[in-house]
Length: 227
Image (cartoon, rainbow, N blue to C red):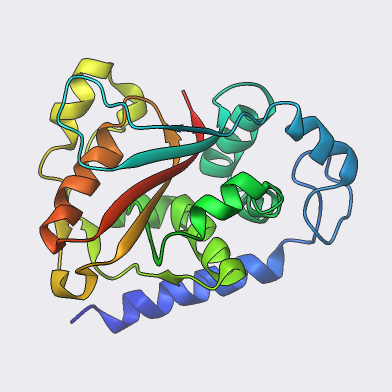
């Protein structure tokens, strides 16, 4: 059984994030109830590419498809870095409000019945105060009325950040990092695994490898951007 205090803290942190940040456009900072003004939405639209692939480098692939909406550059790269490292957690609303305007992406995501965000370690969670993938996943789940599960897949080791390693080192670094519990509850589910950035695919592939133990019907990966 999970520690109730820890679960309570996560729930409280999530609620606080929705209260302390005013509704402003995540790009220009002007007040906007959608967290994205029309001018900045048009700027993001010029960068949006909407891609679907199933390529994994130098490894067996454990997921069925990778869906992404941006290349990791320009405006979106700056936003993701602020989101992850500058404590600007409210940006998840900017991302989701833009994502749901893309009809192709909307139709893709709606084919899945279960969202699972890539988990972060307890140490990383204490430092950052939130899981960036979980915030996006919860907002998508709420808007699209899809189940989100955060109590099955866990990161049980605190490792060197993948972004600090070479492509060759990432696959080895991520092995044995994740744990799955209550796998029978995910059997025959169509799982959409959510992360922020896809570089080599090592992280989402390792998560997918663990999730395969639950015998799901399908595993897709969605990231905001592909590097």
